[in-house]
Length: 142
Image (cartoon, rainbow, N blue to C red; front, side, top):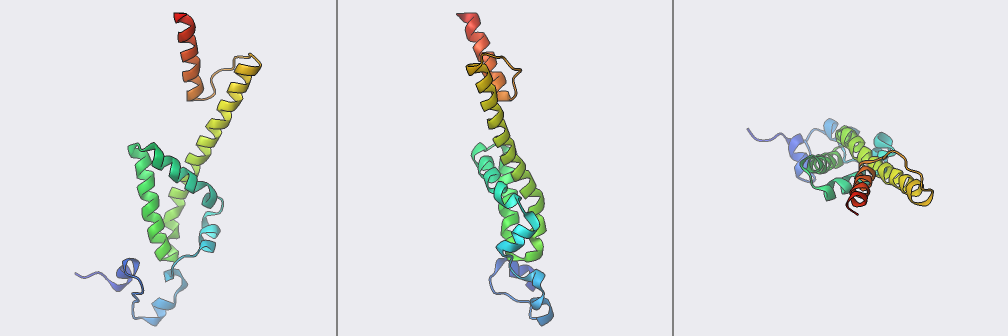
């Protein structure tokens, strides 16, 4: 059958249910930025970076993150109660951003100790392990 008025309201702007009681409920109103901050807190800062990292990476898993975050943001911006859809993906995207930042910091620490102090630490990240392997292969071939 035809879509209900409430579902159509998610896709068509200014569609109301016709029931004043339902239309006046605050949960059915579009979300504002204060609501995102209230429910997602610091994920509001980190998640966009995780979204960009996932978009650039382009693997199937990263594209899932991009699509899920776009769909959940669209629906949560239409109805305040749907901000709950943003919780899991905001956590995932924030984790991606924090993971990339942590990996970069550990690479810098590893580079500092190996290049400037001539101390060889165990590789802290995958990139550091790959660089160590390349260095060992170059030493063997020379």
